[in-house]
Length: 65
Image (cartoon, rainbow, N blue to C red; front, side):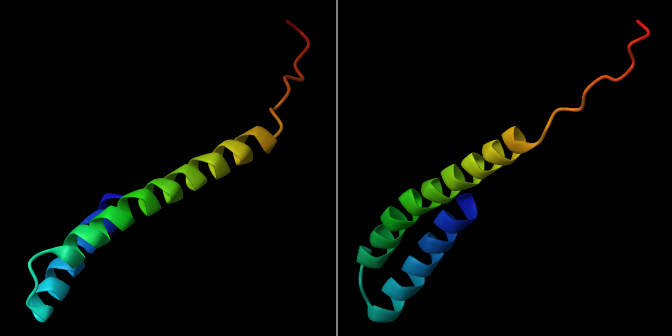
């Protein structure tokens, strides 16, 4: 998540510098990358939760206790 936001920041700075602008691409890319990164993290967490719930728990077969 942090890598995507920092990448958007750097890319925005480079584009703004190339075009001679003072920040619209930097601000825009950072504002777009934050919710996209959050969405990706939420999807990953939900996938991991679903995967762990789908695995059967090992049963204790030792009945000598």
